[in-house]
Image 1 (spheres, rainbow, N blue to C red):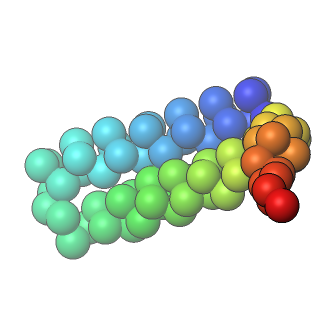
Image 2: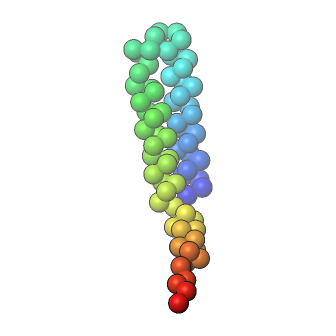
Image 3: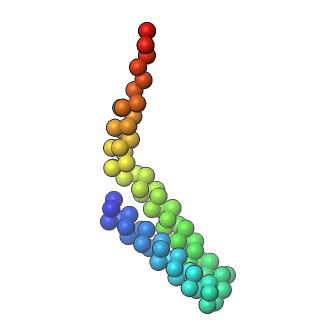
Length: 72
């Protein structure tokens, strides 16, 4: 996940910076699509991050340690 996550996040940042530059030179209306690509890349990054095996392994460990003991 690390390489894929880094590439997706980097693309999101590049689209954001390009969108800001284009918004300052030609206007927001013409650069709107760049901001939407940035948003899509960052949302895709969050989805990939949530599906990573490291996160699933961490959830399993934390769930097993949260077992509730009932006192009688």
